[in-house]
Length: 295
Image 1 (cartoon, rainbow, N blue to C red):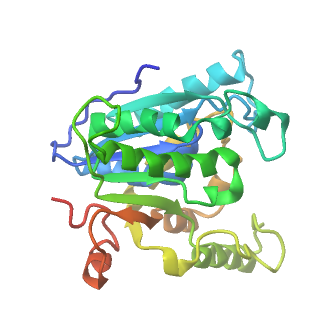
Image 2: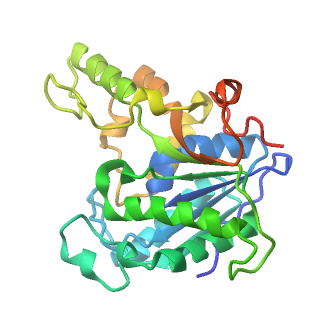
């Protein structure tokens, strides 16, 4: 399917490129909008591949829709791509697999049922096209276990291998990705947010006294935290572009401004793979900059 969402930015080109591979339209904004906006402002070319059309999403925000869900989400993705100032956006062409155990999992075109090499080649073609130093995807658990998020991780890992392989049946010169990271939700920060909300007498999304439990990424696995509070409002705009999925009454936007800036003004990442060894010095450099050490 053709690329969409190309945007001309006023930041100077730096030769650096970032590619995000996300399962559904809205995942790019929920998981990495801050980083995409911050990178674009630094002159990095930012690209997103969306693996499925999100056809099985529900109208979570309860908006009036004149379009079928698949068309609605394409319109929303175009608006988000513009808000994120992406250099390009592309659809991978698979069908939303739905939640675990649903009939949608059995659909022949569902992403979860895709041949790993075939899907990997599709993503690898984009890797060779935009030649990113850094790639962002889900982690091996699929963040919260959704079949498409798990498949997104597997396909991205395979795509990075294929893009670097001179014998792969792909157009373009082989390309080695410097750093593959997964977006992370640090457990410690979730616990702090839960405690802050509870202490202020506000409703926590994690319910009662226990907090988030084992949801999220262990803090020790988090390598990079991108701090860009100046982009928090931009992240809000990008999230709200997905009108059927995120409404003004969403939890994300209904806690105090100081907590919004604190918790929405930073995004965290864990390393999936690196083309170079990551010793203590390299990890220290990566603490706040995904492009640390990239030529």
